[in-house]
Length: 200
Ligand SMILES: Nc1ncnc2c1ncn2[C@@H]1O[C@H](COP(=O)(O)OP(=O)(O)OP(=O)(O)O)[C@@H](O)[C@H]1O
Image 1 (tube, rainbow, N blue to C red):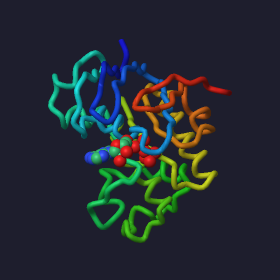
Image 2: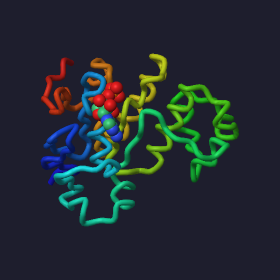
Image 3: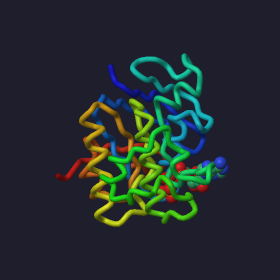
Image 4: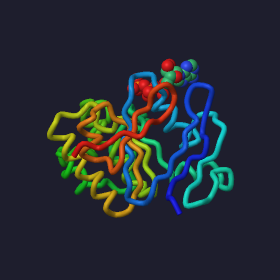
C-alpha cells in the first residue's frame, strides 16, 4: 500500500494529479515558475481548496480531522513564517545535532529570529519541519536560499530521513538536486505532472 496516494487531486489552477509515493521514496518536482507546484503541495496538505482524493497509508484525508492530516503530511513552505521572537521558542527541544550538521552556529537557538540570515532561517525552517517526525514531507524549494555547501548538508539530512522510511515530495528549481535527492522525478507543466528520467 502506498504511503501517500493522490487520485485526481485538482483545483481550477492545477491538476488533476495522480501519484503514489512509497515509504522512503522522494519524488522531485521541477517546472516553470507559476506552473502550480506550490499549489499542488498545498492541496495535498489540505491548505488550499481542491477536489479529488489524497490518502495516507490507504486512509482518505476526509477520514481524519484536518489538523491530524497536516501533522502527518507536513508542508514546508518556501518562505516559512515565524511567530515568536526567539529561534528556540519554535522548537520543543532544540535539535542541536541536526543544526550542527547543517552548519548552523551553536548559539542560534538563543538568538532572535530577526538576527538570522535568510539562509539560516531557511535551514531552521527545515529543522522545524524535520522535528515533527512526519511520515510525509512536502518540501517547497527547501534549499533555495542556501550556498552550495549548505545545500549538500541539507540533502544529507533529507537522505537520512528517506533511509528511515520518510516519504518526500520536493519542489526544486535545480535539476541537479532533483537527480541527487530524488528517487523519481517529474516536471509540472501546463498544470500536469509528466514523469521525467533521473540522469545519474
Ligand atoms: N489565491 C490565488 N489567486 C489567484 N492566483 C493564484 C492563487 N494562488 C496561486 N495562484 C496562481 O496560480 C499559479 C501557480 O502558483 P504556484 O505558487 O503554485 O506556482 P509555482 O509553480 O510554485 O511557482 P514558483 O516556482 O514561482 O514558486 C500562479 O500563476 C499563481 O499566480
